[in-house]
Image 1 (tube, rainbow, N blue to C red):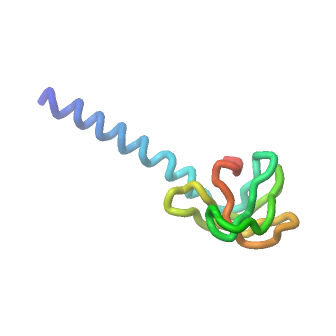
Image 2 (image 1 turned 60 degrees about the vertical axis):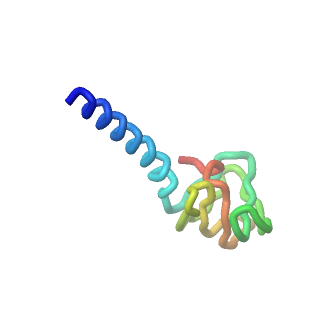
Length: 91
């Protein structure tokens, strides 16, 4: 009995920690850029198609598996679909 409770608490703590970042990366809809500028790319990590600047917006529709990149329609002068770094968007 003494060994079961600490193991259960540790398992619960690890499961809760693992879920928190994923839920933040699942936020879709119109999001603002919070950094000075961010590149809009054709694919995550490849070919820049434009730049969004602070307070410009992107309508996020999905995220890559890692949650590091968000895909959507970039407003401003870009006016194309593309990928941006999730970390560059406001919460």
